[in-house]
Image 1 (cartoon, helix red, strand yellow):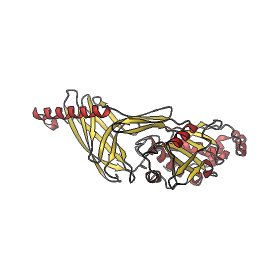
Image 2 (cartoon, each protein chain N blue to C red):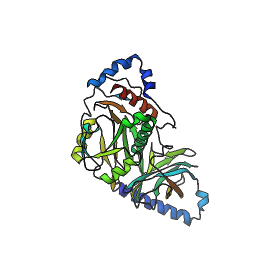
Image 3 (cartoon, rainbow over the protein chains, first blue to last red):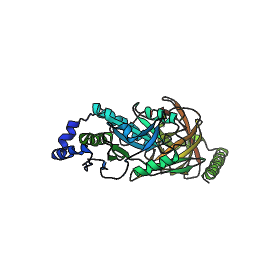
Image 4 (cartoon, rainbow over the protein chains, first blue to last red):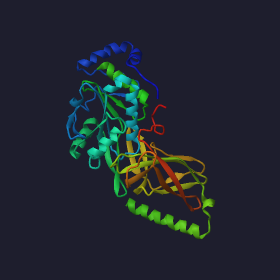
Length: 202
Length: 163
């Protein structure tokens, strides 16, 4: 728990490659060499979204410019992968120290019918008070999921339903370029290392 | 369809239990299932469901048929699986408990879903759970456990975390 990572450690590891990468902030999206996650720099996906936050304000990707948004799709009645991913995100933020303040965790619900703004807000903030939750209509939710290549579906469960969904965390650089996909199987430390690589680029 | 099946299996269970009681089988004689480290995830106000987790070891080849709890209107057993970072979730009819093998109900596989909660589950609450387990001979056993509620942030039992 007391592991802290600094950008310097990661840059040393990147060596010469890092020099070329620094050019990335001019808006081009040079492919990145991540140690654990998947490079999404050249993917035509996740370039935009328009959803409503829990205060009723419309948010787009540019609302988070200057920050490093990390987007996770889930639902509050999810017993396993969602709390695990959000708890990991909170741990990553702490582990990154000052740099962690740039990380903006965004939880997008795939269950807008049951996830009210009130429940969503309380749900994400129990992990970290800086986390935000976004919600759309059914059409907006379908659209944003398609934009990110995220799969989700309702699964009948007795008189109600549960949900299956993609559990990747999607990371943008501070210019709003999608960069990194983090698998739920990665540890907080592994994620933090790759996030510092994103920060070095832009 | 699912509801019909589970209702039918519940009826079957209670009949078996009655048979066992009538036959004079003492509870201790069939108490062959051990439950360790049960816990329930805390909820925020208005959150209608939560998960319960534990480790179960049965002495003989057995089956976990159902779980009940007074805190929820509907208790189901679900199985989660992960393929190519897609999490798939769904109800199962029963969980096999092979003899002597510890089966984990954890966030990475089988778990108990407490759906339609009667109230918020807060840190420190003790959540009563009753497991219905059928052994190889067809005898059913009720295993009562009290599961403490732990915060969603408690990562000591979750997967993929550095400790």
